[in-house]
Image (cartoon, rainbow, N blue to C red):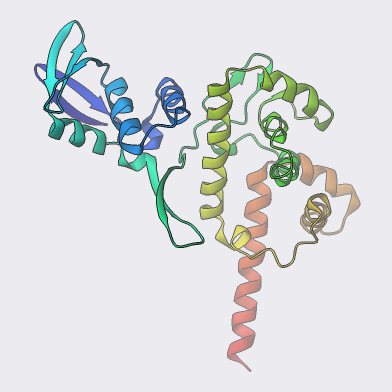
Length: 270
């Protein structure tokens, strides 16, 4: 957190996605859905974070604000500086045509909700996720382009009823999620996006390929992974599916690393 003084008041400014509270993220979700400019989102979010509301705008571009019952004025330059504290919310994205734009890309991995009603959450950074859940996550993600409503089923693989995930309950749980506040749903999806991106960066050997080895059938590909992790032993496959995602990823990553070292050693002796 960064401390900034405005008048006699000291406010704390989050310096990254990981320092934003769930309440702040909800406000950001509301602002992001209003079609505002990047600068407007950053400034309005900054004012929310410091707990100030706009009373009026002056002709010179400054704003009269109210905070804790006291009025104070921010100049146009001060507003710009304050908004710049949240530059990290937006990332430069290059389109296929070469155009570069700023897009809000979530980069947090702390679960915004540990539980929602009867639904149990996945923990921070997929901490409680099993490989079985991950298989279904990949399946529903593959359906998003053709069926946007599949996003509720995807989220139901993360927030699920019962102590343990059961694929038979996905559709029922997805209906529960569909009735949630849309901004809560957005936060849940942001969490998934942030965790997935961080996961790809943590395990580049696993997620860095071009997908050329894929059969096009998500479950077939995942079952092949399960078979490999179980060493072809049918009695161990259920243990792999019920095991935690990170245990599977570490095993896969280590296996790929050993294969890379072996190939490197063989190439040196050619």
